Length: 459
Image: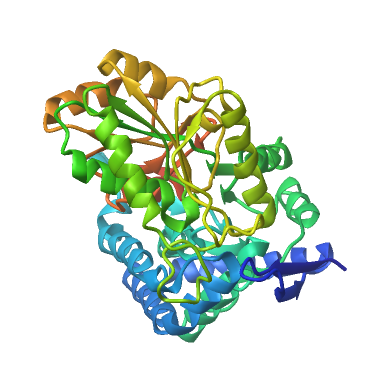
């Protein structure tokens, strides 16, 4: 029997444990969920929408308990109030567009034929959610999958062991049947065995590139659909006509919020040479004002990283960069314990020869480079194995569109960063993954097209 253990980054203590299901028990649970799918899909769309919306509201009612629980599990400061606002925004948008997004596509009707395409659910959707935003990332798939008539099996990361349990409890209390939305505790081995055995009709995974590769290997030959959001190294580009103060505030927040543990966090910044020095000066001043500490303290603005090995990787990238000639602008904070509590850092004199500018850091560090103009910036932004988002700073929207068209990325931001708009498809390219969540396209990925070609009987 495998025991899953959540170690709190606050003090290294064991915060929660759960027993992972044995393979036979997991198969039986998934079979029970599959058996519930037809009846769930047969319910009117409006009823499914109402039940999912009620489940999200019930989750929101738990927020006072969830916020400190998240701090204990993964270290986000309580001052930021948790994730319910974003969770509700995403679920509400998907509920609002469901009827239109899932409507039949009419191909034509005449005296002889009626033709249309219907969106039908895959069946059993398996959601493997990450720890960094455990509720917002999960709801991206859970809400539209259920609304579309799928049943859902949710497996959460061990670092946020209790998040899936809470989501299921809220949805069940709101009236979603337990078999329709099931939270499970699984080992990696059992997860792979279920996928390779064809237990699921669609798998959505958010996590590391290595994790995504493991999902693809497990699904090989099963023809199971996959949605993968994997690594990122998202760039910001500040052009010479940018609002400097706004760019500093948003990009540095995008790099440091949640201790840099954001899927679309800013990990490298390119600044036009005319603004480079003031940008670096203002950025360093902003970061020096952060307060690193216990996330349960409402005065803390930067909590610990979620796990010691994550912090060690960031420290290693910074140390390697310094050895290669980078300049550090932030002195070590007194609260930096060499463990999960990690000082934020801004690096200059960096190059793409350094891992900190090429590999995912997923921590509170950002490298800043001067550029001569758009061509150089585009080349550097594209010099990455990842492509999730890019943040462009300029007063010229047409220029932003031209630069955006040349960037290999999933989302182009202008004068903002680190935000997921549920009206747009959340997607990436290259090693960031494949597929897309939210928006109308999110519904298309969670359903399959079924064509109807109906010949009328005439006499």
